[in-house]
Amino acid sequence: MEFNLFRFFALLSVAFVASHAARTFEDYWRSVLPDTPMPKSISGLLQSPDQHTGKGDIVVKSENKGKPVYVGVNPVLSPFDYLYAASVNQLHSNPNVALFFLEEDLLQGADMNLHFTKSTTPTHFLPQNIADSIPFSSIKLPEILSKFSIKQNTLESETIKNTISECEAPGIKGEEKYCATSLEKMIEFTTSRLGKKVKALSTDVEKESEMQKYRILGSEKLGEKVVVCHKQNYAYAVFYCHKTNNVKAYTVFLVGNDGTKAKAAAICHTDTSSWNPKHLAFQALNVKPGTAPVCHFLPEDHLVWVPY
Image (cartoon, rainbow, N blue to C red; front, side, top):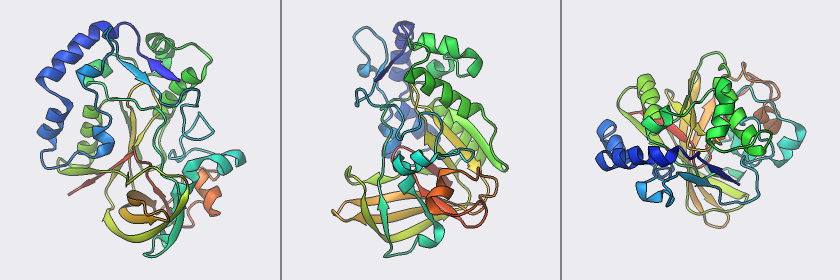
């Protein structure tokens, strides 16, 4: 599967190259976050001018031809959306089920069966001026599909439609949500909520592996004031970022049965009373809303931001 941006990018790519020559993504990062290292989950999404096609278009391709865009069986809703209701089939086949756990299980020496995943669409950030020129609204869906050369009633069109719909849906009580269509906008949202001195962390797994047993070597609490950004399935890099109350952020150090080491970002929600009672987490952990702190590890291309 692939997302091809429309032909008008042949013209916009000139601006893309010019803007990058004067100021790259890295330059921007250093200018606003000079004391914060860039995590791999961000640097892997940066696209340099020489990654254009010969025609000048920006082309975003999937490495998994013929496979669905979404990680999991449901191309509609994200398991990290609190209003999400999962079916029984999704409970048994969605790899993200393994990322949920109870805070009481976060103990040194405890074992967990885990499978850390990445998005199946290796998309890149667009510069803010280009991202801003592309509509991101349900009412503009026909125009968006046209720009991406995507046909109606296809998996690609449903992906675009549902990602935008999730972004436009209201958040739960105490949640400030925002979908960032560029790196600049993600940083602007984060710093407006947490202040200028922030650091970004993500899950870092030594090597890709299948579902296996991991042992917790230890954990480090990062704080209770956080912004979490979940990478969305879209034609270019879009992040659903949200700041919520009653959360704790951790870095958890793990080692797998095969020796794979992982430093995983984890979020614990201490008040889940506003979540959908059929959310994937409740079904996987066999608990009810508001009865126990629910935690989840972040997939490798998601981010947690904390002040320092």
